[in-house]
Image (cartoon, rainbow, N blue to C red; front, top):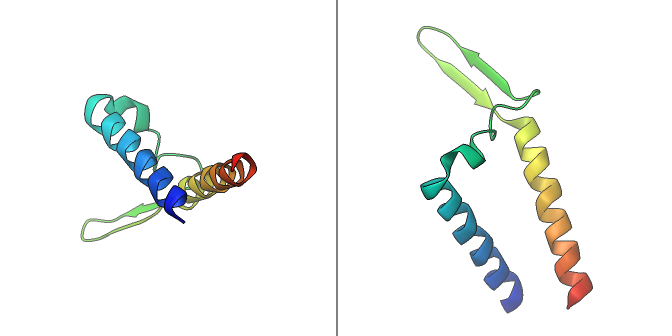
Length: 70
């Protein structure tokens, strides 16, 4: 469990550094085909379903790799 928490922390640090110093690298998130975005004059609805699927697959592969190498 400790390795998992350390791995998650390292991933969050890398994402934070990318977001701070190279924001163009994460600019695709939320703008993929399949992300639902409805904007009216008084309201906004946003549901990044495709982006969440991509993140879910990435996390799944990361956890499988951690299990394989440990």
